Image 1: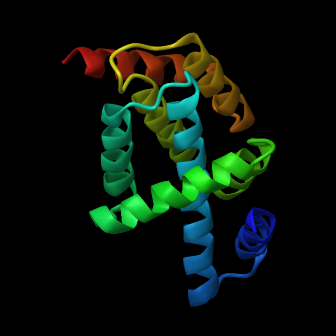
Image 2: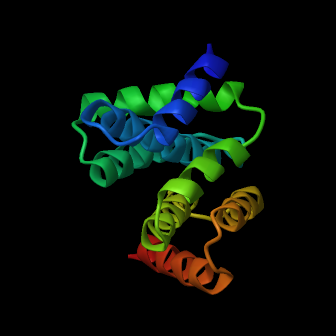
Image 3: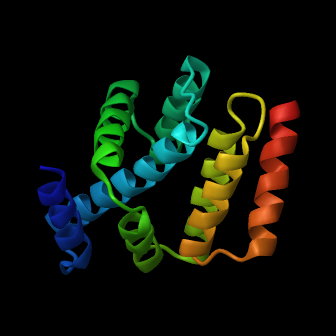
Length: 155
């Protein structure tokens, strides 16, 4: 099922722009982003309620979704992440479809998730750096975004 869903995501991203294709493409990019966010939240093998709540709020704000649709996206992303063999497919979709600013925004979201429980675990740190590399976001920008997330955690 997940393989079929992933194939639909790839087709949606590569199709010419039409109203339906644009909606499918946006949905595919939302799912890819949400999968990465869920993976970072789970990277330390502890997915606390505060992290889940923070993840939901970030998805609501970032994608401008009502709470029920955000929860649906998080659940689908969790299921997709469980079945995924690699994050490369998701990062490749995002890299091909987004500009530098949008990719940096995703990295910022990932750092916010990593710091959601009050501290940065080494596995979360490693995963965000790996994803950033796969998105081709410069290391300097990644470190600035990390610093901003850490500072925001303290306030």
